[in-house]
Image (cartoon, rainbow, N blue to C red; front, side):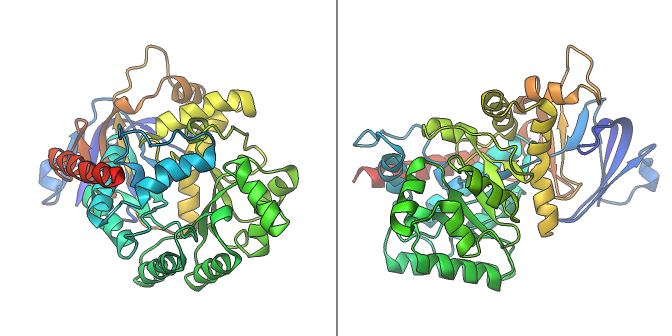
Length: 426
């Protein structure tokens, strides 16, 4: 099947060139697009072909998320923790670790569906996720994958292995990766953070990544406490420890946050193969500080479970970056699009050129190649996303999910949120 987009104002996401054109969009996980002079008439189209009249609206590549936590999707509005956290470790203990211990497979499925729907409606068609559910690990990655695929979004998944809940759960985390990656699924090997991972677990995780020819996905120096723990237990800083065990040498490794690296660590990471995922809103929410990222050529944007809106995440990064690194709108947009380079280098299906958004962006000022980054930084909104095409298929139309029943997903999420909150209250 071919999807034709007529009367499009197409924006090339790499060159920022605008073209008034029609497009032919191929279907499939590695499908492409062609700019054509005119959509073929009905007599020349094949059965199943479809035409959408864009009426001069902006058409461009859809978006990707470089670091998510869909397991947090049912937390919105939940009752406060019994003890008010006063530092980052207490935030983990009193909020997120209380939540993740209560998750079961149904809650994970609901979290994945509602997060995927939220992403899709905001133009995000690929999610790199970092899951946590220590008492419901086995089969969780496949559950998330299938939920994402029902909605129509691509994915690169992992589970955050940690020693914080005992040896059996550590072993379950390792086994879950081995089974999931061994089934032919694309993914990473996830770790929580240095301060909850022993040397033995770190070594086994790297060995697993080597076995499956993939990278690792780990939180790095999100708070200063991660560094303090590493210095106390291992007499080295976090990036040095990861380098010692081969984490930085693995292709496609993702280091989340990297807020509290010193200059030597920044140089070590910048000269490695690792990518850094920036999620400044989460850093602000957790009060761990902010930093700049111009020291590495490989940085992409994520949301860290805060929400599903990559345009919002990018604009927050721009505002924070005025203080930390003096980032320009052009640099911001390159960082926003860096996830595609990461996924292309990994040869992961589901993020090819046939992932597109049609945006209703009626700008009050001229918008062209020279000033587009300014429009992106100050004018764009996920509310402008009208239609979303994932792998050549329409999954959102007129701002409504069409790949699955939107109301059913919301009802299921509300049901499972109630179960989760009740379990947390016990």
